Every structure is written in structure tokens, then in C-alpha cells.
Image 1 (cartoon, rainbow, N blue to C red):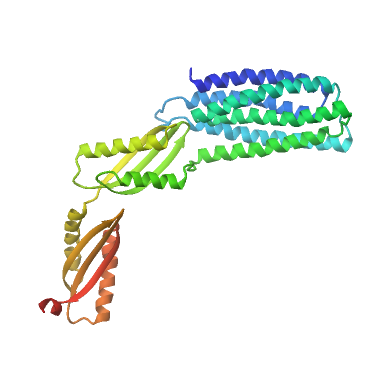
Image 2: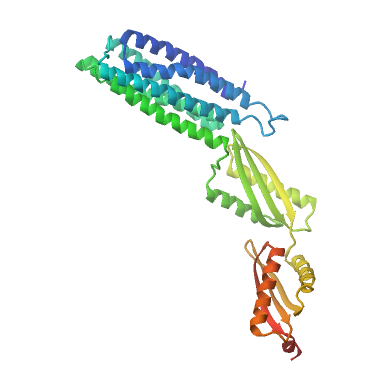
Length: 376
């Protein structure tokens, strides 16, 4: 049995025990703040069942209909929990406001309620930290949400405990519905956060820092035979990271060299994301090295020359690279009949069309020479 499912089952028993304690507490005390805390725990029975369902299905291997696996179910479970909690606690706030307006509040047996709350607080505090730790370790949103929910239960229980201390030692009970409203607002804020986290996972918001992405690109660019990193995409789904990379590589490399590049990229991805199961997709597009690039550009220049009658020849062609940027410089030999202004316009037009044909060149630098200069 998967360890995430094991912790989910343990969470079910913890929640059931907590629910029994808190239902008894509400019955014997009649406290609205205790009721707010109890309703949250009772909904946890549904939520932890949803968590188990999400975890179970998210572990299924990819199939024809779900080629990237089922991990999104985990995030969907967190989103549903957030929506339901917001609605429930809006109703509880309404009930508490009615109690304030009608002065129908009070706490009985505060000593027994205080004891039950202390027991519940300790259980929640310990087990919540375990769930959050395992959720981070296993990259499970459902486990982290369940652990966070239990941890916040323990913090909210502190508020109810304060309410019972005030009622027990100072006989002040009118604060009970106000504590209930405060608890409900805290839970609503948390639920909205869970809802947003679920949305982020479902729409594939990139959680990786831009600096890390650039560092990965630079590391890949520094590999042998790699001329450029044209595109790098990162996508998370549960414990799996999908890394999609499109490279420009030298056109003369063998299959062995291409395989070496792929292996090096996989090693880099495991270095940057050690806690994830990384699925790497590498697309390699052949791009000539500087020498063969020059040959290809020469052929292109003379093909384009037929469209520019005023250009008679080219000379001093030079292709060079600075870091990951390619530059091209050349001299354009133009007809003597052109004025200086016409020659510059011709050169600019030629540069523009040439740039469209070779977009991987970062900058094209042209110099104008006349036929008479060559003769001299």
C-alpha cells in the first residue's frame, strides 16, 4: 500500500475520534464556538474520505484517456474542500450573528468542555505536523491540505479554549458567539487559500523561480554541441515534473552525441529537482555550426541577390557567436549608379529580408562598397 494512502487512512481514524470528542463537547456545553469547531471536524470526515479517494486515484498509472497520469485529482480534491468550507462557515457566521441579536447564547459545563478541548488540541497538533511533513516529502497537495487543516484546527481550538477559560474562571459567556465568528472567518480565509492552490495546480501555474529556469537554460547551453535553448517548459503534476526542452544543436552530431545530451539534461533535472520524478522530453533541431552556417548563408545571399539587381556581389562574410547569440557581418557591393542614400536604403531593405530568412541571427551588420572601390 502506498505510504500516502496509509497516512490518509490514519487521518480517517484521527478525525473520527476527534468528531466523537467534539460532538460530546457540543452536547454537554451548548457552546457556539465549540459548535463552529465541531462542524469543521465533522466536515473533515467527508474531506479525509475525499483525500483518500484523490490519493488512491492519483496513484494510478497513465492510461489512454489520461496520458499524463491522474495526479490532477489530488489538486481537484483540495479545490472542492475549499469551496465547501467557505459555504459552511458563511452559514455559521449567520447563525452566530442571529444568536447575538437574540441574546440566545450560553455555556454549560465549561470544565468538561475545557478538558475535551485540551485532548483534541494535543492530538491535532501532533498529527498535523506529521501530515504536513509527509505531504512536503511526498509532494502531495492532499496530505499537505489535510495536515494544514488539522494544524489550524489546533490553533482554532486555542481560541475556543480561551473562550472556555473566560467562561470557567470569570463566568463571562456573552463572548461565545463572537469567538464563533472569529473562528469562522479564519477558516474561510484558509479555505480561500486552499481553493487558490487547487486552481494553480489545475491550470499549470509555473511554481519554479525564473532565476532557476535561467540557470537550467545556461547549464544546458554549456553542454557540448548545443547551440541554443529555444524553449524550456516546466509542468508539475503531483510528484511528477514534466520538463519539455527544444534545443538547437550542431547539424553534424551523431545519434550517440544526441543521446549524451539527453542523458546530461536528465542528470541536470535530477540535480535541480531531486524530490520529483522527472519526465524529460527533449526535441533537437539541427543548427549549423559557425563554419557550416557560413556556407548556408552564402547560398542564401546569392539566392536573394537575384531579387536585388543593384547588388553585384558580397565580400568579407563573417559569422561569430558571443555566448548564445549569433552575429553576421558582411560587405555589400552595389552598383556605382546608386547615390549614397539609395545605397543605404537598399542595404536596410536587404538586411530586413535577410533577418526574416535567418531569425536565429541576433544581429546583421552590413557595410556598403561600390564596384569602383573594388577596381581600385
